[in-house]
Image 1 (cartoon, rainbow, N blue to C red):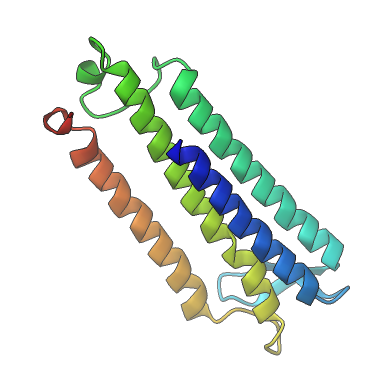
Image 2 (image 1 turned 135 degrees about the vertical axis):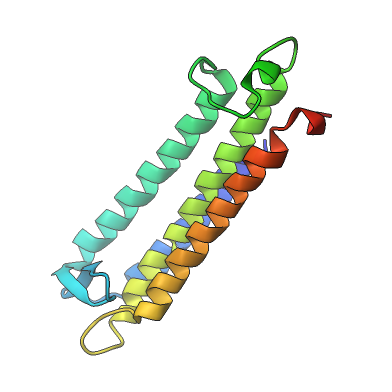
Length: 167
């Protein structure tokens, strides 16, 4: 149940961010892409940009739902987890499926929630001249998210899927 709740909550957070930004973006001249320095380098209409936000959110939530469904009911032939032989023998596969579904659901939920920063950043980017996001903020947010995902994946590989932790 946890992965579904997490996906629903992250979807609501993302939808709220898109809705909030829609109410604040001008009809035209909205940044739709930022370069590595945080400067806006492509512009479009509000409807184009918001449509992109909706598409990105829908695709990511769709990937989240598909990943959870595949973990719960799909083939485990292609699953690569630490101590694979241990998890695929006996009656351990239901627990493995629950763990995979939870972990994938949480990872994709965190990603969707992180993506909610994009519509918010687009609104705030319009407050500077020229339009842009401060590089420290841009790369700080991306770096912090990447570091958190890497740390979590290391924890999963070293501890969560270790047979000694199977309860």
